[in-house]
Length: 124
Image (cartoon, rainbow, N blue to C red; front, side):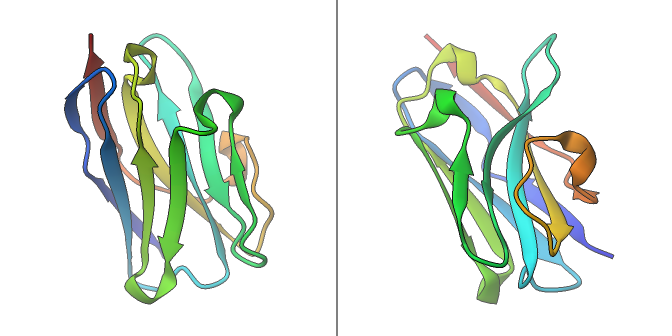
């Protein structure tokens, strides 16, 4: 069993930055593909960024490329999402997700474990 806990969300002015953290309890992230998703008000949950646990390859959705950076520290069982140049369109609940021994997927259904989410609100 993998329990994921996100933190770092909050209220930020447009143009500002935040760093989200996702900590796994119970086991390490070694071998796990991990990802960040977000759900904006009135919208479906969407893929933001992910790290392939086997080869370290990183993927981003187009809208965050150049602004967001995903990273992981298996020794600390933690994954991060550094978000810069935030806009009101980034307002959402951000979730981390994990699946063992799989490629990064943009589909919600391909992840076995989820955190409860952390709220990010960007105001102009």
